[in-house]
Image (cartoon, rainbow, N blue to C red; front, side, top):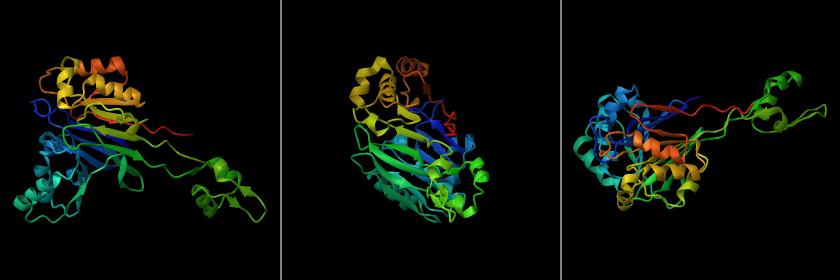
Length: 309
């Protein structure tokens, strides 16, 4: 079951010829979630073979152009492709007039609804949930309302050990009950405990997205233990003062957050266009957090299944 992250663009406010603005896709069990939607997002999706019509939930961190300018083109293309399924956009309340303007001038003929789910939280809070995944939003520390997102797989259903099925000649109804965590009492007096006959097939995986933010103490608690952390690193250490002034992070800031949060992997992005070589970000981050990676558009990062057996 797939759990992977693909960056479609990782530049900050000013795009470059080699890097598009912020837009990313998270694949959870072949369900695609779009996270931010910078200019050219739909072009990048086509370039990397990601189905535009498979996107039904979009998560916007904040209402700065490099994170939302791609939404007009994306929604229009969805309509031209014949979309009829509703799309849900989770975004701060400031997105409402943006969406209203778009629908007023370009929404005629749409056969689907664009539904804005307002994100307005003061602590980490669940905002979306399905049978397999739960998404939480949490506040970041930026110049305007800005939110991070935590995607967590839910606990998979129990499996019954195959050798136990044969050993106890388990019926289908007994297997079903054991997989639901119920113990089975047989007419013979035999008592079968679910705890002994079952196991969790794999450990749930997680991904955290921390867009534009200055470092702050509570962030590590919001994302503790995450498998993959995407964290902005707009500047390197040569512009620490500018990072603080603009309420952004350096590569070192991102790495310290990953270390303090006990993350397993760090991906850094949202690079300022003043840097022609982004390797400097990776070098700085790895000095603090060894498993650091520099985001490159089109690069996919997989979280493998860690089996419990």
